[in-house]
Image (cartoon, rainbow, N blue to C red; front, top):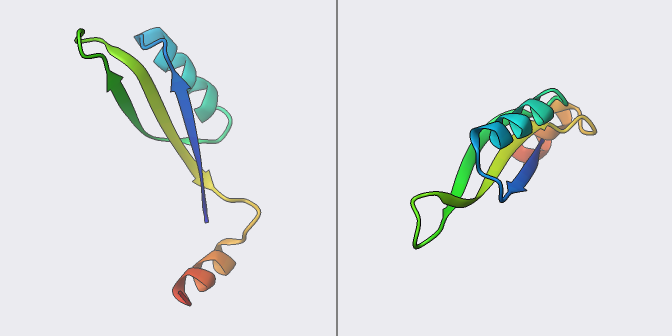
Length: 71
């Protein structure tokens, strides 16, 4: 099983994105991607959504693969 984390920010600068990435990766999350929401009148993004994943530690891997194969 996989857990997902989405971090939303309206401050879309390199420093803000680096801070988000470093904070969540240091907590054990893996960076998965980033999606920008654009403004119509500007080339600069209005928001960013940063995506992270990590294995779900509550469900053992053997259990999660057997339950997904039965579906």
